[in-house]
Amino acid sequence: MELFYRSTRNENVMLTASEAILKGLSDEGGLFVPEYIPKLPVPLADLAGMDYQETAYVVMKQFLTDFTEEELRGCIRAAYDDKFDNEEIAPIAKVDGVYYLELFHGPTIAFKDMALSILPHLMTTAARKHHVTDEIVILTATSGDTGKAALAGFADVEGTRIIVFYPKGGVSDVQRLQMVTQKGDNTAVIAIHGNFDEAQSGVKKMFEDERLKAELQKAGFRFSSANSINIGRLVPQIVYYVHAYGCLLKHEEIQEGEAVNVVVPTGNFGNILAAYFAKQMGVPIAKLICASNENKVLFDFFETGTYDKNREFILTESPSMDILISSNLERLIYLISGRNEAKNRELMKELNENGRYGINGKMKAELSDFAAGYASADEMKKAIRDTYENTGYVMDTHTAVAAAVYEAYRRDSNDPAKTIIASTASPYKFAESVLNAIRPGEYEGQEGIALADELSRISGTEIPKAVEEIRNAEIRHTRECDAQEMEAAVKEILGLR
Ligand SMILES: *Cc1c(COP(=O)(O)O)cnc(C)c1O
Image 1 (tube, rainbow, N blue to C red):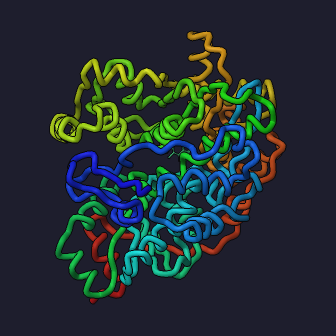
Image 2: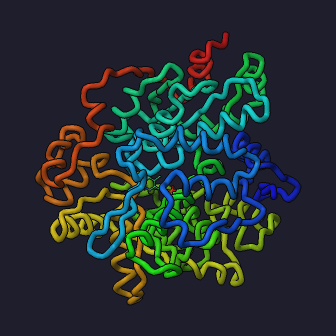
Image 3: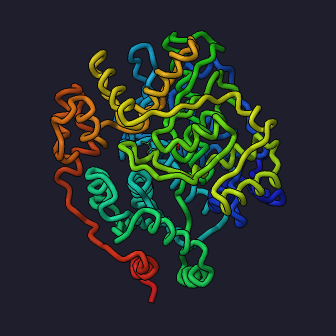
């Protein structure tokens, strides 16, 4: 049976999966949501016998019904291969009785790889299905992790180009080096003289510019987005929650049907929404615990039922969670309103105009699957230090926010359910913050890349290939521009005029 996708803001929109992936965002600004959430097509016990790739097929086939078996298996094979430094793709580390689901074994050592290594293949397959002959130009503004993961995913993928803008001086040492050393003839990386918001606005402006769109089309190009609102990023993220449940069964850590909690360090609400979808598919998940850093707009929302972005933006040491507009929350709002697109549209309009909205009691009651917490900088650092001292395990700053939130949750709730923590980045990506949490003050002022050996020594782990590579790699991208010149830079790269 074909599963169609609806817009959260327009009930007349109905697309197939491949159309939704190609389009990214609905014309009126809505996000695509499947008409219903399909059930797992196999008994839970079967999950224990499946490797990551097989689980990926079984889960994704339920959502991407207009992809043939051959197409989907081809995408999965191309994505989850030896680019990952662990055969299990998303291995689980049991530390102090908690399961860390390590989502950072891909080419750029952050969880964005889990989806961005397959999105390019889904997109080019979708383009072929619809006889799109234009070259697809991916435009991305990044504050660090997404840009590199998208570059790595789209590098040398036939029929695509990728152009990434990052704020000069606004990303970590390792993040910058990862991007400017990116290989691939179809890649371009540009430092803009401005902040992330300016980069983001510049990209949005190009997406909305009809004149530019026409000009591109004449030259055989079309823009697309690798942003986390694309359903082609959400669906692959459901896989690792299903697979993790199978792994725990296989290793007899849980009984069949036993419900587990999931804790997710959250920014744009994409990763935790995938866990919610896994639960709806039938994976026995008890609580979905949403962990925020000091930008705790989501914690406040779950506490009060009011989403309010009118507050100070705080720069933290978990920068990938420094977000005040969690775009994927719109999908949850739509679902808990009973798929009422008019209600959702009204709330999103309020968010747009006043920066805040409130949900009614009935909608709030639908949120009982969720718990929420937040961690201060000190709590985050304490989680890294305590876990290291007790067990030797070293986690990154984002994962540590989740670990700190979980510890407080367990203390306050006495909830005995076994718990999975989504571990979203390798500690090597934030080595300076991680080492300073373990030995306060000792590494002050040292750059992340220079601290890889020290981190390797104290954690007893190998330096990931992704870090090894950039230590001596050739710098390939040196382009810079003002925020006002972004369009001119894109045209120059594409050889227009
Ligand atoms: C993107 C990111 C997050 C936040 O994920 P969302 O899907 O935006 O909630 C958390 N940790 C790391 C390391 C990330 O890169």
